[in-house]
Image 1 (cartoon, rainbow, N blue to C red):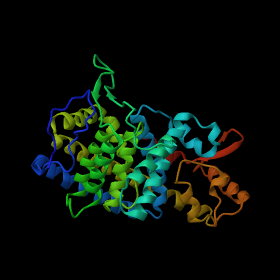
Image 2 (tube, rainbow, N blue to C red):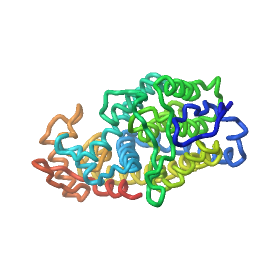
Image 3 (spheres, one colour):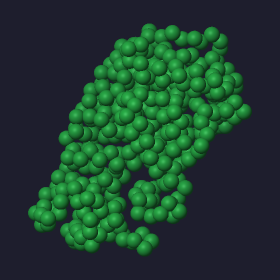
Image 4 (cartoon, one colour):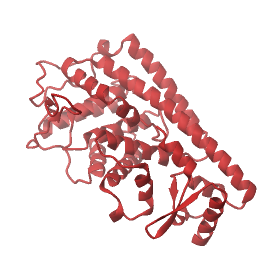
Length: 373
């Protein structure tokens, strides 16, 4: 039940942030239930079609990179596709700062994914670990002397005005987080539809705002991990941030309305629509990538049957590839890797580009698929 006992004041720390769950009658409207049906159906289709890929790592690496790029763009951190993919062929010192931010988000997502596979539960330590990876920081829960406030974004007369002040005090924040994590992890005590939990917990994490910075990205990683924990997906492939970018004004407005007016219903409907639409989007990307992979494999097998399937799959893990990145237990010779890449360039499947001292090869068709919004 809600513990809201006093009016919300955007200029004061919201230590009275109500604990979870929200009142059932607030969230279980007919429109919410319809949204749950549609979102669950789309997500189940996504999970099923992803299993049909010969190697899901082809999809995971590409989709996670797109998610990382979009999630950082929400925080006004931008990088081009070209800079992003080139980063895998150059040293850390040569990478641009914004590109590093994107790659840290991707690494944080992998770290969280590996943790959830082992623990099957979200913990405060796991959230801190994700935050630290994103921000390359060593601190944890926001200390009381940090007077964090949320300011109006965008443009207009109210730009820069305080719209929200999150809870303050380490103990208060931990109590709110413990309640959130119990709500997430305990499906016996809180037997709600997993997608409902994802929508509710996304708001609650943003409202708690437990870290100095990086809360938005940490919260979006949390939403993806919950889909893994609740067995809605096997691997983190839902490209959720793209929808938020497209509907950013509505996203922040609905978050604000939950805080100020406890308007849960419209927020949940927004999140369910985001999950449904991005599931459909990701399904279309999987189908495009799978068709391209099948055509490419058939062409290569016809002309160069000695090139192994595993080699071809690596060409689909990211658009840019260097000969060194192809070496593994199946491919131990750098000269053989270079030979294959040159052959595939001659076929028009790849094109080469010199970056610094290294020649890399680009899967142009894959690059174009991923670059399309």
